[in-house]
Amino acid sequence: MGRALTGRLASLLPTRADLADVRRDPRRDLLAGLTVAVVALPLALGFGVSSGLGAAAGLATAVVAGALAAVFGGSNLQVSGPTGAMTVVLVPITAKYGPGGVLTVGLVAGLMLVALAVARAGRYMQFVPAPVVEGFTLGIAGVIGLQQVPNALGVAKPDGEQVLAVTWRAVEEFTKSPNWTALGLAGGVALLMLAGARRWPRIPFSLVAVIAATLVAQIFHLDAAPPIGDLPAGLPVPSFGFLDLGALGTLLPSAVAVAALAALESLLSASVADGMTTGQKHDPDRELFGQGLSNIAAPLFGGVPATGAIARTAVNVRTGARSRLAALTHAAVLAVIVFAAAPLVSKIPLAALAGVLLATAIRMVEVGSLRAMAGATRSDALILVLTAAATLALDLVHAVIIGLVVAGALALRAVASQARMDQMPLDRDGDADEEHALLAEHIVVYRIDGPLFFAAAHRSLVELGEVSDVRVVILRMSRVTTMDATGALALKGVVEKLKRRGITVMTSGVRPGQRQVLESVGALELLRLDGREYATAPEALQGARDHLRCAGILTALPVQRTAVHGSEEPAR
Image (cartoon, rainbow, N blue to C red; front, side):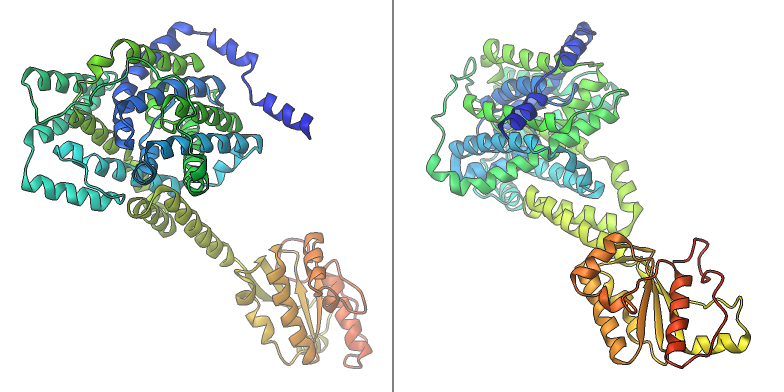
């Protein structure tokens, strides 16, 4: 056991291939990393402020988590740090437990992510339906935008955890005492980012807009637009002093939520990076491992929980990154800023950061993807809308759970609707009309198609339970795609009902997996005639003839020579 665990951990560590990739085109990676750092700086500051721990926490997260995830993660192109989705989860934790609670949650979530990596849980990301992901992203964009309203309006953030209620109270405060300066800065930054990126996509307009807003606030002494405030000149000394071991029990659900979100968003971002390139394929388990280590380390330096960041990863890919060196450079540049430019960064107006995040929220909404998803099927549209609405009204984890449950229920309904039972005609070849008519009065053949499981069994077997005026029922089961205990019990109940009415039930084409389920609930013995099973439909039909002759109902009839009609496949 210990040796297996050691081997599993060794498989999650960086390899020589990673080092070879770093050496391939370092100049290109360094340039890409610098560009990403310029884009990431205002986002890291903004998400730190939004989380409730302050801009310094956002920078610490971007540096520490960004570096560790770059080295140990499973994607060559992923860029990690504080994100809007994680901020949405952290706000209520900060309000309820304070900064210490957030840091404790981050560390525990990191340990959970490492455990998931060792358990090889990364592969399960592929089972999250696309409408859930799109609805989740749309809901996150809405929450991020609403969270910026108090800073954008220049009012103190009202108390509360529910983002819609907090936003409404902030608007009420603004109407009582309007702060047009803060609103103008936030709106100007957002407008410059959106318009500039559309015209000149390669220019980091988020940084340009923040610098411009800061200069305006300083030159014109705009006291109505308060700045971020003092930042420490460097990262704090690592410490476990924030841990509150007595509160671990109450913080555990929050840690599970953070770990689930970190896994979901990081693996989604890594998949997006793969899709934007050729020849790149991330390792989902290594990605979870890297995110786990980064979330263990970030709280030690006062940072918030981190995930893979889709927007920064996309910038990294588009600027030509080839290896992990680009993401590592991004973290190094931000570290230099923390140590060398903290006094300048502290003068950035909160309203300017609110504008950056408002523009980021708007750009998160992919109208084309939403239209495609909503126009695909009604089920997809319903899942998307429910997930987005739950994200706004509840929280991200509940939203994903609701989306998955609804998607699962609709998928079950779709699968169950494929189950059907059709009556097959008897074969006439070799039978005289008189003999065939006599057989038809005593034998009926049904073919069961599709799944025979809890969601479909009772509905699909209704017709079978109503059979009358025959002596033998033959069930062709080779096309049953799956069967569970509920389906086997439902079939058993129908067979017992027919037998009580003197009707013999026979089967053909029962597969090994189905035989096991039928036998476990005691149904298989009821489907055997004199202890015999039939492999094909012709054999079952001949067995029915023999049974009717032994019962004195039929005189000797010609031996069946061909398969039962109703399928181009060999009859079973």
